[in-house]
Structures are given as structure tokens and as C-alpha cells.
Length: 80
Image 1 (cartoon, rainbow, N blue to C red):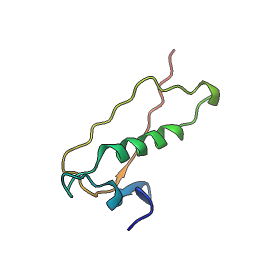
Image 2: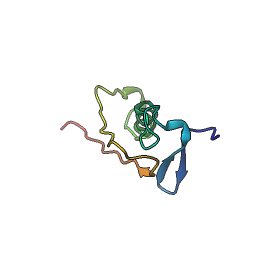
Image 3: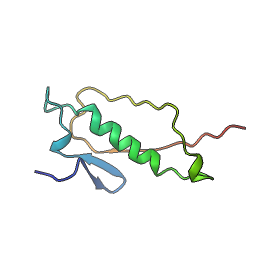
């Protein structure tokens, strides 16, 4: 069994068997997916690291996506 939820494959993160949903081997549990996204958000550079505050973020997890590797992208939007 794997010792990580995801492994890197180039720019993609590939889920291991630890991320599988208890309801279907073709689906991922939402918790590990949310954790991967939170980890990606922490890596986004900011002008002032002390001002980092996430007020709200959401993700859409497609049903039946299974163990396909995905890349995570972030977009930094700053107020004008």
C-alpha cells in the first residue's frame, strides 16, 4: 500500500489507493482532493506571507474520475 495520498508525475498529481471512495473504486473521496487543493493554495506566492487568508474556495470533483492524474493550477487575483 502507498504511504502518500498522491504522487507526482511531472506536473500532475496522481491519486493512490488511499484516496479511493468507500462507495466506488472508480471515485475519489473528497477529503484527499480538498487536501491536495489546500496544499496547492499554500504554495501560491504572495507579496506578504503574513497576509495570507483564504476566505472561500471551492472545487468541483467530477463523478467517476477515478485514479487519473490531474494538474493543479492557481490564479492569483488581487484587488485594484
